[in-house]
Image (cartoon, rainbow, N blue to C red):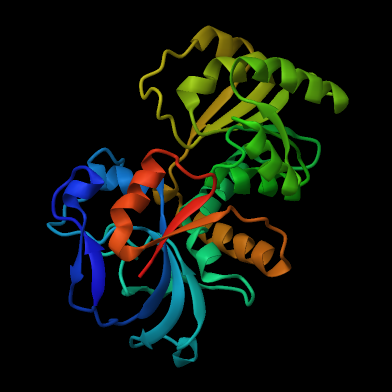
Amino acid sequence: MKAAYYETRGAAREVLRVGEMPEEAPGPGMLRVRIAASGVNPSDVKTRGGTGARPNPWPRTIPHQDGAGAVDRVGAGVDPARLGQRVWLYECQLDRPFGTAAQWVTVPQHLAVPLPDGVPFGIGAALGVPALTAWYCNERLETGAGRCVLVHGAVGAVGFYAAQMARLRGAHVLSSVSNAGQAQIAAAAGIDTAPRGEALPAAARQWLARHRRDAFDAFIDLDFAGNLQANLALAANGAHIAAFASDTGLQPAIPVRDLMRRNLRLSFLLVYTMPPELKRRAVEEVNQWLAAGALHHPAIHTYALDDIASAHEAVETRRHAGKVIVEP
């Protein structure tokens, strides 16, 4: 089969290769999926570059956790009725050397989730890490009716789903954006926005006043260190911050007395170590929303597998608003 792979860590154009590799037959409890689209996540490019949060000890790695396609072989113990089933995939390269950047991937059957009719494969490949992370943040924050939630990064893949999920749970939601184009994308999905940076606190307070609130109960954050001061300025007593990333500083100074004085809570979340029962619930609820057509999806930016280095660079430089996929 044709696959992308790397054997050393480093820059995308220096280490990524595309070539022929043997196909893997599905063993007991496993199935094989013919890949139509493979999602590229920031964690994928960090792992390839050698800065990821997970160990990756294999001498050769086919990257990417997420994907979508159709089941074309099943192993012992897997219902033969799954043959031909459209599926979306998650965590395919977790604790394994071979991910979805290939024509086929063989995985444990629970990692292949039925993809509702009418949902394109590109969207299926965009779910995985972003949608499950977004669900995890909302679950940890216990978002729901009456809660006021600030989501940083409205048009990032995680933030886009997180803001919508909070609204589906009944919360009042405001999201930050970097420019007018991002605000327009968020508005089309029914997400209220405020500008990032120095203007955020004042704009957020105006939004809170319209909702007859003084502060936010919860924050979903993609840059814990960079947004900490803004979050503290806008946090209610007992507020909860859920951070799933912090690229601007991994060892920030924590103003302990300020957090303590207002009984603030901090949660740091990594989808790859999310408890299995929570992950099962997340997959189930995401699929319910998909089947009901309740979610807007990020714009899909497609690259050929042969151009996977450009796809990785696009994620690293945040070239696109939306989700990057490769098609084998």
